[in-house]
Image (cartoon, rainbow, N blue to C red; front, side, top):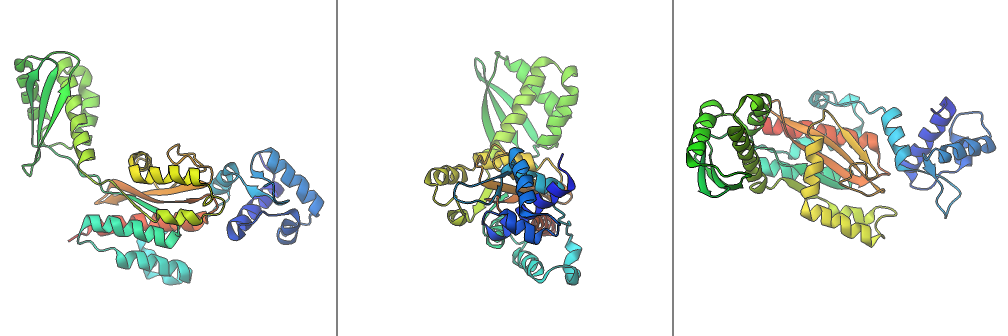
Length: 353
């Protein structure tokens, strides 16, 4: 545990480094800390912070910079970013002029005419206002099927036919662990349609978890396979992640010259699969989440952080958005920007024409 003196100096060091981008020395901290401490005493405290892995000394400077661990402690225990609500737009006096202008820009440029356009606009605005990378996961569709049918194709191969309420039909071939007679498949078809038709995939999955012990093994396995097939269909038929502002990272200090890391990062943006995993995980948590210096395992770069927040449509979480930028970012500002953008996107999509 850090004592109050060490916490104060760490907080000041992180804030100064975020603001200036240059390593912070003991004399700077001595002048600005408000503590009656000599530079020598501060050097000793900084040495202790370095031993704890919270700060580090670049080879080219006598000053110190925060490590990913130091940023994490700062964000978790020293940051006081107040959450915003849509009502703050009507109380502009409570917001700084810069923040009020940024939030007004987000609000005024999101139009509900086309949901996919809203997603693209949100990603672009997050990028513009943060000067980093904006990422938005498209709204998950509530996949409801009117009818499901299983047909035997051959040994250990079953065709599952999924019919949506609007008449859309999707087919998937299932490779099963055992061979099913057509009579078994007819029984499974009748049972599923009698008890599960009209439910969304998520509801089916949850209901199946609670009832799996009571179902015949063959039916349970086929239902699990049908739910997975439906999930795969939706994953394959939607553009799920919109990324904007990748080139902004070329200007990130101490990162733009690392061509190997940049190449891996741009591969990540191009493939989007891993980004989808990160945003999907974030959507299961309430409020803003912050991944610092590769904590997410999806953006495995010590120099980068990810700030995400889920958004709701009609009271249900359907997606996630966020900002990817350097660990040296103004976290309080990014938290507010991501949080209010998530609220605005949800509000816009809930009130779409």
